Length: 266
Image 1 (cartoon, helix red, strand yellow):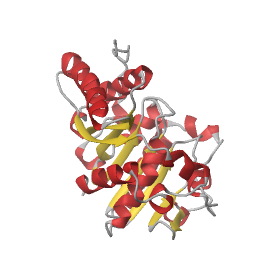
Image 2 (cartoon, one colour; image 1 turned 90 degrees about the vertical axis):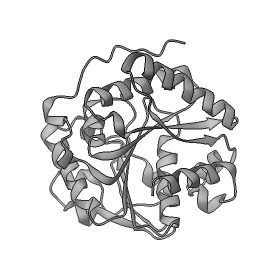
Image 3 (cartoon, one colour; image 1 turned 90 degrees about the horizontal axis):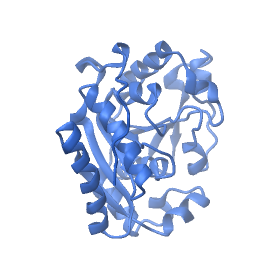
Image 4 (tube, one colour; image 1 turned 45 degrees about the vertical axis):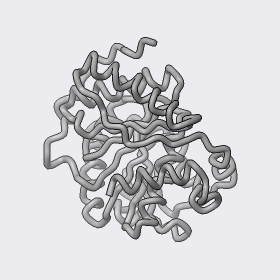
């Protein structure tokens, strides 16, 4: 299986992360492609961290295709579009999600203009998130799928970047593209792999080893394995019913696996 992809484009100078642009308590959740369960994992991770008695903010950073609020079944009063238009300050756009115990900062579903924001505005947003992070134990960013400029800028502020993959070859190829660009920006120490929808733990370990070996061969480093989330038929049921897995099906394999990952990040 060939995972190498032509991703020689590096971060522009304005997006390279200096130490002052990273916060130890920010976790960015990324995926090279859509459909691997990134947003579901972000929500479940935030919920698991909140259950550990931590103050958590979940930011929907999938600009233009945001759906954290949809999966949670909530209607936020404000969203990121209003913030970027100057109609509301960033802290005021935060909503308390009483059923889960964590706060959310909603994006704007279908608002494609956010996905093409000028780099200066994305950097301003990143800096705003760094400010918000000071008020929380952890800030979880659900990034957009892919490796575009906005994803790279927002992920640069995170001390920990979780790249969610599954066994599909396209998932691994695109995850490698994200890892390669992160490595080129000097942030390879932040990269951790989450294998989602694994049939067994052994299958998940094989998926991780496939990706890890390619990174070792071409980038000369091996990303950390954050954890393996086993396939669970209860996940799509929770999503269909717009309820967090830890609320609707708390005693399931996927719920247990995400809780283990959450505790490892504290």
